Structures are given as C-alpha cells and as structure tokens.
Length: 349
Image (cartoon, rainbow, N blue to C red; front, side, top):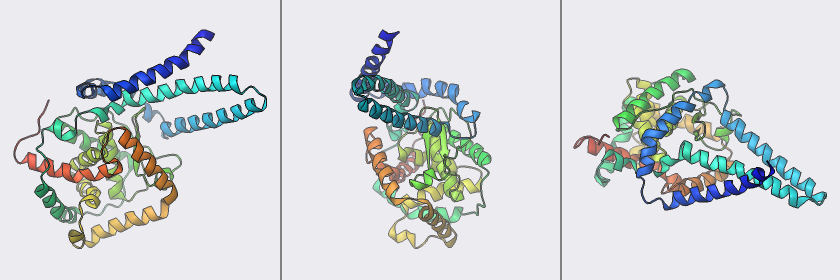
C-alpha cells in the first residue's frame, strides 16, 4: 500500500506529460472529430443525469471544496514548517495534489475539451471562404432584422426556457450535420447568485459534469441567448464564436417569436456599426439599455479584468485564435452560412 501511494504521484505526473505531448504533437484533428461524433455523445448521455440530481451547482460546490483543500494544505505546510517537518509534509501534500491535478486535467479534455481540437466549423460544414461583401451585407441588415423581430418578453420560467432552448439548439446542430444535443438538463444558477454577474460573465458550462450555468437575473432577451450559447457548447461547439453562431441559428429559426428576437438581439452588439446604430428601434434600444444598466449594477470592474485576462489565456491555450475577440467571429460565420446556403447545402456525414 505504501509503495502504491509513492507511485501514484509519479504516475499522475507522467500521465499529464504524456497527454499534454499528445495534445501538442497530434498530427491531425481527425481523431478529435471521431471522438466528438461517437464517444462524446454516448459518454455525455451517461453522465447527463447527474446535474439534475440537485437544484444547485455541483460544479461550484466541488470547486469550492478544491479551494478549501488548497487553503488547508497551505495551513498544513505552515504548521509543518514551524515544526521543522516541511519536507515530509511537502512530499505528502504535493503528491496528493499531483493526483488531483491529473484527474482535473484528463477529465477536462476527455469529458469535453477535445472539442477544441475538432476541424473548424466552416470546414466541417463545407462552407465557402469568408466574403467581405457578405459580411458587410449582414452588418447592414442586422439592425433591421432585430427591429423587425422585436417582441416584449416579460420574463422566462427557467425550466420552460431550458426546454425551448434545448429543442432549438438540437435542431440547429442537426441542420449543421452534427448529432444534436446529447444531454438535456436544467439551467443552473451559480452559487452565490451574483457570482457570474460580478465577474462580467453571463454563463458557463462544466466540462466535467456537462452542467450548464446561466445568470438567471439577466434581462430576458440576453438570458435566452446565453442559455442557447451554453447549450451550443454542450452540443460540441467549443469556440466562443461557434457557440454564438449556433445560438443565433437555433433561436432565429425557432417557432417562438420571443426566441427569434433573442437570437437577433444576442448577435446585434457584434454586428452593429456606427452607421447602423442610429437606426436601432426605440424598443430594442430600451432592451440594450436594460442590459447595460444590469452590468453597471452588478459587475466588479477589477474582478472582471482579472477574469477576462485569465480567460484570454485559457482560450489561446486551447487554440482559439483571437482569444476573447473570437466571440465576434459570429458575424463572419453567419455571412459564410448564409452565402453557402444559397449555393450549396452544408455537407452532412
């Protein structure tokens, strides 16, 4: 038993190095596509029931537990240092944390993160190259489409919103030639309730539990778009621009007029230009003002800057070109989709 405890940290370290080397040196992305279309949907269905076992975020509870464990380890190291036993304590705690790190690292990629290594969405869908004229045309019409789609949205029932968005995202993924949404569960508010708002984030998913989190206090149009964005991640669209595009496609083709408006509204900030901003209808302008007011009332600018800097590193480490700027690539994706749709249908597997 003692020999096993000694070997585990070394095995964990070796596994991290080996897995990391594979991620960097893998010659092609074909294996990631095979994983995404065969292994991931099956595995996702296997653990998809877990988030619905409790009404709160399991992810944040486990994250808090890890933070508490890290603090406890530091305290233990301080006590050991005062007792002149720092060497033994460092080896014991360091080995334990190496095992934890290995589980987190492998779980991230095997459970969901390999989606970052798939071929780009336009390649998978068979779209033509970006067309500057098509992008400019979409920018000119984005405000008009949002104005025309506007309907009042008083509020959303969380379970009803989750059900409608799941169905819309599933249809959109299948339209793009993918397998659809493999998991179906409720949207989780973060713990504490203002956590996401404080760091300037609207939602996130847990790559380990496939648990979707949305700030349920957002103004209704952005709440629906964020829910669709996070469900798009669960459907296998990891880059932020891709998830924005799938959210737009899912919502704007929905039979629910509230969702159609939310789809146009969510993309509008990326598409609007100085020339078209003046043509935004007063009703849409009021919704944009409500979103800005919510951010002013909830966001901690200092914490937001730190969170954005960390997420920038995360995105670039996962080969998302442009980092946070990749959210705005949704405009080019929409233009490519619209252009290709009028000429040749998307390639389907």
